[in-house]
Image (cartoon, rainbow, N blue to C red; front, top):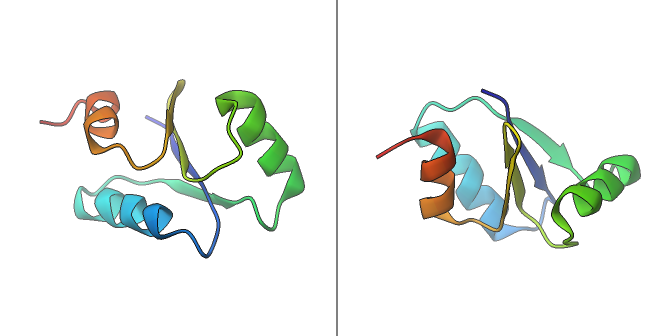
Length: 77
């Protein structure tokens, strides 16, 4: 399973998402779109959104810190 989170340093919901992944022992790749314009463009193309976090779990895109959607994509109870 591949988990990526598109973030910025000033995003509280990004911090909440990263904390959630750490609590559940989920390895993830963090991509700071404030420092990487290519990644920011990629995030917008995938999600249609400019806001963060955008979470990619395999091929599923979740916009925002939506615990129910994240758990569903990760198949957690």
